[in-house]
Image (cartoon, rainbow, N blue to C red):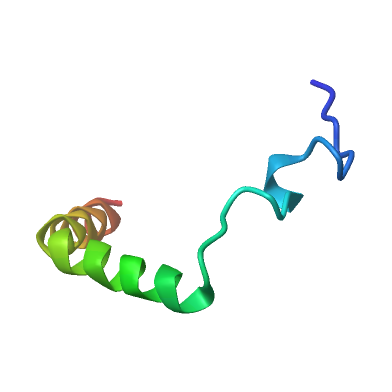
Length: 54
């Protein structure tokens, strides 16, 4: 499988996607983590359970 790593077409290297400031990103991330903390805890518990089975 060939990949195109040209900086002009690579989504990960594009600086034009988000116009949010670092403060706005931090606030959004905190809000996301607040709203989804239960799901995150459940995922961590499932991963630990799977690790113990091996």
